Length: 341
Image 1 (tube, rainbow, N blue to C red):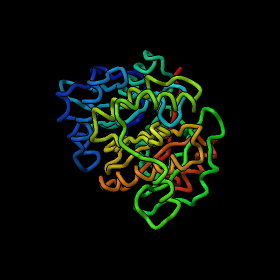
Image 2 (image 1 turned 45 degrees about the vertical axis):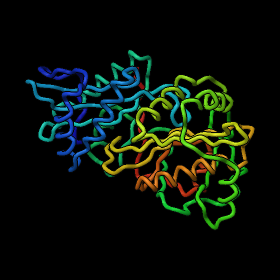
Image 3 (image 1 turned 90 degrees about the vertical axis):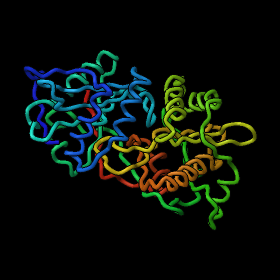
Image 4 (image 1 turned 90 degrees about the horizontal axis):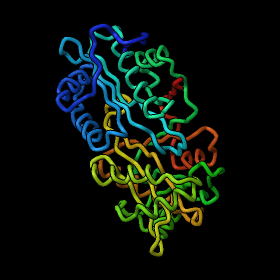
């Protein structure tokens, strides 16, 4: 989107909440920008906002009764090991032919004002490094490169690292403990051991207490509200959440939270986003994280999802090493952040 950033709202432009009746116009504009229809994605995001309005911020820019642009944002509570909230800019679009007139800036201003009302003082987003229009917009809007590494991996059978991940643990309490592997019948003995040690299943509502307990031990703080929100999303929107729990000897020993992303940050092909992985510290090195990621990859392959992405802070060397051993590498996407005064 070659929208330039300008100061202040435009005269005659009405900024308002995005509503269900806007879906046709939003899909039309997006299809003109991306070259394909992503109706299912936008319908899901609008429905998610209706279910949990406190977590979402979605605005429309309207002039003379015509929707000229839109922006979708969501509060980040604990994804990717975060301890401070942020507002994620998921999608921003302006009708072709009207770009460069300040609609994007007005929409971003509405998103920033909403963030401040929530007590959130950071915006985060991503963009493909070849999307020069979006990169220019983010530059003029005051975004800077973030402090996180964008990683992704192609999903296919056998795409796992070596078997010495037992030594990989999170170096600080604020980082997540994790390991990786495939839990599908293979000739690889390491993978078979990880699969045999843990019974990996889809998350259930009754798992909430155990997940909160494990997360509290890892993070040294209570994030029950965040865990509750993403578990509710997993149960109410199974079309996009693919979250798992590892069971051993009657207890939950680890979990992974992921979703299938059909459009955030301008993506036009489905990709899985892994936003939280946690292993009970008492089971670190037992292959639990390996088994979780293994089953996640198997499930995603069955859904015909070709890539999985995640975000890791640059100083979390143990987790970075873990993901690299699993076949992850630098993404073609860049992470950006903007601090709000």
